[in-house]
Amino acid sequence: MSSYLKIFLICFGLGSCSFINFDAPRNMDNACSILKQRPSFNRAFQKTKRKWGAPIHVQMAILYQESKFIPNAKTPRKYFLGVIPLGRQSSAYGYAQALDGTWADYKKSSGRRFASRSNIHDASDFMGWYMRESRRRLGIKMSDTKKQYLAYHEGHGGYERRSYRKKRWLLGVSDEVTRRGNTYKKQLKRCGRA
Image (cartoon, rainbow, N blue to C red; front, side, top):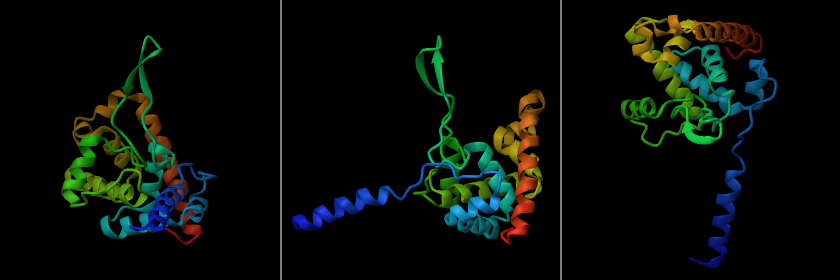
């Protein structure tokens, strides 16, 4: 391979990394603004809606709560005595904050071996897959933002055991997710992207 071709490939590879936007969208209180800033989000959410039946406003409300639409979001670190790092609170990562084990289940079930938690298309597809499983296993309507979020946060087993009932803070968060979902739904209808 010629040295010019090698240089070109290296520059192209490094340059393509600069297209990944690791910042949250501006004005996250407006669903239409988010989709206008990030057209790839709209394509991903629409595809997931068609494939799995997951409403866009529910996807967006849960993704906002989980990662604020940041592709490389991680859980906070744990510290011993406030100074010695002990690692992360969990293996949750990416847009959907999917845990390692659940992500592995999704990849195996969907046949998407190379899916990435930091890719909006993969994260959205994961969310649709998970929501469909929540409907199948738990009878939760796809449009029920609150119950879908609780099943997402607690896992299917935790939801079945009603573990969320002992977590007052989580019930408050689920109410916020529901409010955001309702707001996003109205906004998406107004801009014709529902």
